[in-house]
Length: 96
Image (cartoon, rainbow, N blue to C red; front, side):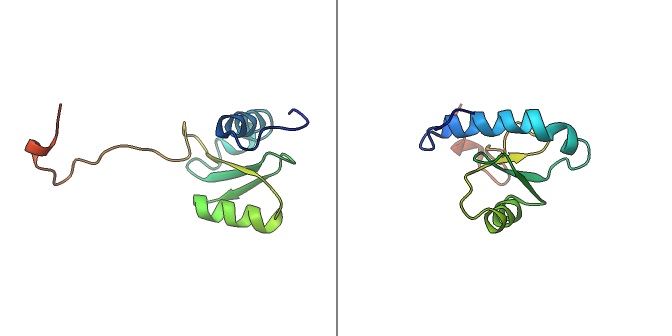
């Protein structure tokens, strides 16, 4: 990690957080906690586990009040999934 990462750049934060996860935590958490959330403090490389994103971030902030966190959902490409649910949607409203 560089001496002064740009904490205003989400890409930098994500890159540092993912690098820390891959190097220090993936092998410990991947098989044991799939679907759980890990808040990684990019400033000191600590990690806090939670069953939800809110739980992980709340616990992390309590333990490290001055931390700067990147959230990982263990076993997923991203912390959150974005998509469209097509339940109860009238087909004339869906554009192709």
